[in-house]
Length: 275
Image (cartoon, rainbow, N blue to C red):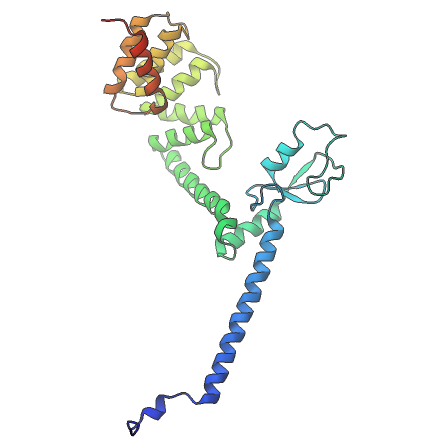
């Protein structure tokens, strides 16, 4: 059959096709070499103990970079004489030095996408957590009581990349409690009653506990019942009062004691007097 008029204009000459294919192959090979170099560099940054990119890298006296928590666990409990490098098994000292440049390099590579997949998972999580903490702190400083309470719980439990800091935790809880945030009132009360992050003050603790109960905080009611159950914090051991406060928990509007609901329900099934 005759070729339709003008079709030949759209057919690439064989030589040009070959040149294009060679250029594509060369580009792919160059990309492959670049990717391989990046992967090798990432492997060099991996902590020898955790086999992950260190989130808080430090340099030990053996000259290697480790995740701080991993090398601290290795050093802990060993005498200076018995301490050896986990890599070379040669003696080393216990001093650790922040590897700031390593941290910055990892952060840049993860943010740019040069490192991805499993290697970057911990760092991606850290970046997301840092951004969320920064935004929550901005809101808290601006007077948002919910953000204040959230920061308090993160410092209390060591979440979102923050180290456990009971003093800062109480300070944020206290600021939120002054704005009548129910979960913060409960947390403040418990900290004051137990003397965690703040000097023990049972009178003030009970005042805040009462305020939390009045605002429908489930955990405040649990603490009231628990105190009467065991006779803690100056409360009289009293099964009838423990029953009263545990029975209030299901009707609370602020559900903030998930870990204690079954404990209270179990105690009620086994000990509650008929009232």
